[in-house]
Amino acid sequence: MAERDEILLTLSCRNRPGIVASVSGYLFQSGCNILDAQQFDDTEADNFFMRVVFNPVAGKADLPALAAGFEPIAGRFDMNWKLRRRSDRQRTMILVSRQDHCLVDLIYRHRTGELPMEVTAIVSNHPRETHASLDLGGIPFHHLAVTPETKLEQENALWNLIRETRSEVVVLARYMQVLSDGLAAKLAGRCINIHHSFLPGFKGARPYHQAHRRGVKLIGATAHYVTSDLDEGPIIEQDVERISHRDSPEDLVRKGRDIERRVLAKALLHHLEQRVIIYGGKTVVFTG
Image (cartoon, rainbow, N blue to C red):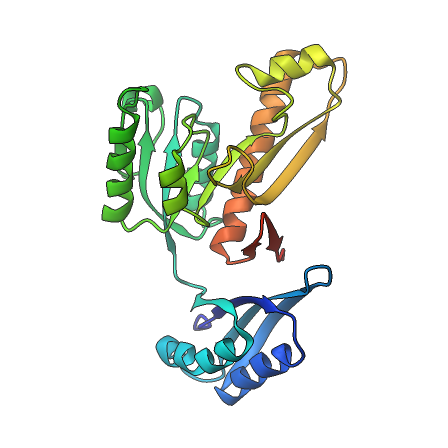
């Protein structure tokens, strides 16, 4: 059985009557069938958000023609919108430092098809020997060393690599370097970070050990888009796990790594499937 030519449409605009009717009517007139539709009305801000999955009733969709035909509707409602094929694999670069638990998890999920992406490169501020035991399966590895004195040059090299590889998404998989305001701005809306949810309560080194000393009862992780405000970008996904006095600092570290892995993977999947719409300092996430 031939695979369906599925198209993703996401949009946001001020809430007005007729948006859903206009979108569905256009798709019907274009010979398309809606497979899934989700919408959200933010009544406080009076904003409207929508994600639609559709396919042509016959043949393969002419994406440029569909986009051109939709432009008058988008203009009428002053929409921010995206249209792409669901089968398109976004080109994704993964950045990592010494801790590689998130990197290993993303590579595994990529290989099993769980994460629909094309990995363009793995970049680290540590040499390849740091991750010598990892089978990268032919994914290019780049060592971009950095010191406080060479941070600007290193970020220039990183940005050039992002452009050369045509990477659409950048994932900070426990990349322990703070991006400059300039690079964060260039990657706005397409750079995802993961961190433990103790921030800002437990800043600095060994946060799980700090949490253990304070007797916390919940640990967690947060995946968010990177902005110039450190660890304060729009949140995509979060999760927590209850712990007790019986858990040692090492238990917290182990459980924390597991939460970080699954939260980052889920956030990245939401982004790749075009389920996330950023507005203001937060997001609308259309989960499946």
